[in-house]
Length: 252
Image (cartoon, rainbow, N blue to C red; front, side, top):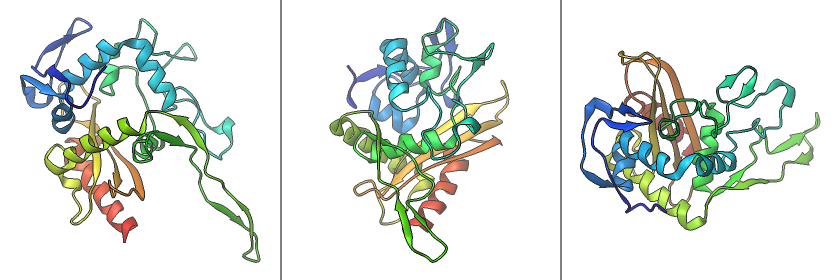
């Protein structure tokens, strides 16, 4: 239904669920492609895309990314819980009338995630659309240094086609090359990333900031999610430099 070249009006103040939505700095864009909208992080474009896709399609892809269940981690399941907003002890479904699907599409409203899940989002794109089951280690070694067990890579779900993952990779590279994520640039390394900024106090620029990325974009070895709470700024200014430093260290 949508491609990187699909065009959506990026004007400021578009009504989403009947309430005007603002872009950062109240910037207003004309019709722009989705590739440009990701590069510039245009809220109103992606909220409109979310509304056009609808709650059922949004729920389907959220399910594929694992947002609706406990992390598939080799860790005691009783010590983990599904992320999201709860009402009377139950996780609110994306189909609920309580959900503003447009604002959920830009990471607001009822959407709540942990860094592991967002690192998995980056990794799934890097892995050609396949979401892998995360592990804390790749092997078990006994006291004598012998390997007694190896963790076999396991596909958790297929999120998207390889061709779609390739298109998204190109869009995420633009974010780092010339968009909101330029502070994650690493000389000689192609980095694909996306900034995120979650408002926590209306009327104040105190935010939970995010940056997800993988590198090298043409032969991925590292996928990462960085989040920092209660920051006076945006994901590209605060979280992207941290992601850059971590990736540089891991790629040495």
